[in-house]
Amino acid sequence: MLGPVVASGAPAEEFGRVAQELVQPLVAAEVRAYFGAGEDAATIEDATAQVGLQVWDRVRSGLGGEEPPIVRLRPYLRQAARAVCIDLLRRRHPRRTRLEYRMRYLERGDESWARRRLPNGQWQAELAAGVARRAGGTAEAERLLAAVHFELEASGGSCGWGELVRRVGERLGELDEPRVPVDEGAVADRSSTSPENELHRRAFLRRLWSEIVELPHNQRVALLLNLRVAAGQDAVELFLACGIADLEELAWVLGLQAPDVGRLLDDLPLDDAAIAARLGLTARQVVNLRLSARRRLARRLKEFLA
Image (cartoon, rainbow, N blue to C red; front, top):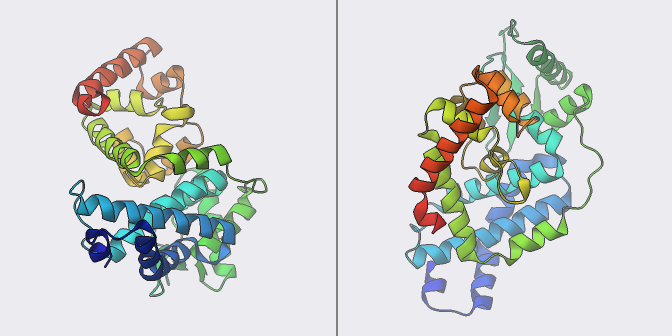
């Protein structure tokens, strides 16, 4: 769609005009589909602009041979929009985002309700006819499931996903404080990063995750539960926000039961004593495991770290 314009060497203004006319409406539709009707206009506008910039950079890098070209535009836009929206939500509504992760995990293990994508692209939650609510989970999981069922029943058996998350959050007291503007310094830092640096960063994170997955179990647990990246941000949150890993993968990598994953996000990064208690080891052994993991990663990722 945009390839001929880029290949022709057209000025940046011309490329931007074509991108806005052809792609931006699709981007906006994907962002609105992800957020649903409950998100504020400023968040939707920010997400749409960020995804549009990613498309621009991605098309140019594909034509330059740095990355494979986009073969199917709509699935790519959906994935890009999802990653950007998750990032914005985690920064603006961290408690709501953690609640949503927990609800999605709960839904995967319970047949009494389900989340499905509607033809218009938006997500809806529905009660399953004739299926009783699951019992026997942890007290926290039971409390969350009861709240989900209460709100779905109050809505006649179905509810938009974003609206359901909001209602369950209100019922359980899992609400964020009134939103404050996103850290302008963080936005400036991101926008000033060149496309090449951003592509390099994402490639590094994808490779880092793939190498962490290959570590022995105790090493990857000791590393991930205490891993920080730039500015002290928890690395697990970054992997989730960028769409590099999802909660299901994270549960498998850490050897956790599904209901534990959402709760764990609130506590990261863990100190050595907490990690040691999980693994049945001493804090010194945890430190040694993490050092071994870091040495292996340094060897495997030396082309990125040179």
